[in-house]
Length: 59
Image (tube, rainbow, N blue to C red; front, side):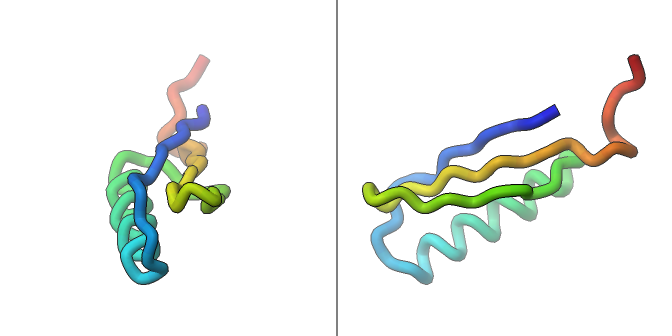
C-alpha cells in the first residue's frame, strides 16, 4: 500500500528539510517507509510512502 503526503509551503531549505524529516519519522511510526521525495517549484514537497511488508495486512 502506498500513501502520498504533501508538505506545506516551505521556501527555505532548512525549513523544508525539517518538515520532511518530521513527516517521515511520523509515518515510520505508522509502519510506512519513505520511497520518494520531490520538491516542487511552488516550495511544497510531495512525499511517497510504502507500508513495510511486515505491517501489510494479509489477503
